[in-house]
Length: 274
Image (cartoon, rainbow, N blue to C red; front, side):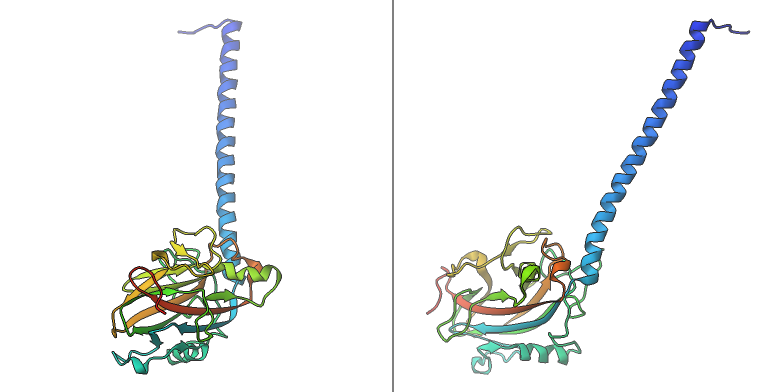
């Protein structure tokens, strides 16, 4: 059977065919644009981390650790004999610890940006695990002991015996000075860590961080760990350049940073010991 269509019907079929072709072209264009947008987002994200991992670093790190009244520290565990512990750990002592473990001293260590959520496990841009003291982040262990029960805090106040309060500083100028905003320090004890973020703004990567006021205000948020009388506690200290920090970019490459950490003890009400 042969179907004969008049001119009107033929014209209608032509219009329907044109409409279908137009819709197909629109779908192809939309799909193409979505692919381009997704590609741009991916490239932008990759370039940011790629640049940081390739060029940003922190050189010539200096670190000194000092302790307050009734509190001692050492890089070895001397048991309960508090007289064998020290009031100060210097950069030279930390360097000795590093070299004894087959690592470079701090003046040769580069801090390529890494990121962490908990201040314990660190990752690269791609989510690969990063190991300590491998041109990644600085890590060392020390032992704290006290002559009485106490909560240990970081303190920004200078101690009575001329020990300087906690600070993260640099001699750099201009944009390179922004390195002090990208540095983090964590203190791990008992499987959890407190993260100190100097010049704290908005925490990144889900981190819970704290900063210090000056004059110092002791609160539960500034507590690092608890000590029982004459019972040493091992604390792992880590310092890194936080890759997700907005200030951790090419402007701070090859920057120098000085870190001074002062620890003080308080009672259960956060009242410091005199």
